[in-house]
Image (cartoon, rainbow, N blue to C red; front, side):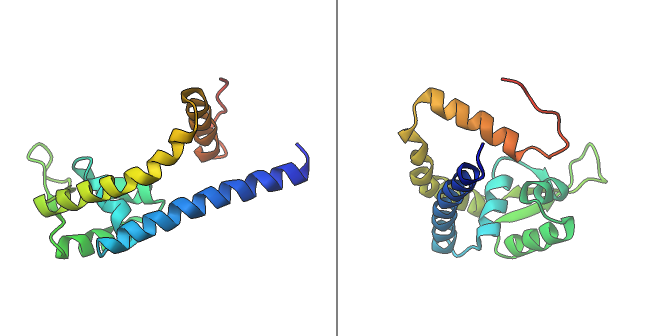
Length: 145
């Protein structure tokens, strides 16, 4: 692919990403959260999760994830629990207040997700495949479609 075409691909990708990022920022601020707190709360809203998994989700250091969880815990949105089957583990789970915010975040993000409605189901599947390739670590084996 010519360099100019690759540059245009990057510019288009960044334009879409900036639009999505701006909307995510607005949604987070509307709920008095930082974008990273909103992302963390949405992840925890999927079910109890270890802090190290939150860090991986955020592409962050575990100590940073711990600080974000601390902030959300102080606000009453999450709590740390210990599963009875393994007392060495610590999980982060949403409180009722946290689940309410997660529901509101998901509802607000639905307008961003509707961006993909412009694509046919086949185009959505192809974009999904392409984004998975781009999101994979560089040393991951390539998949053939």
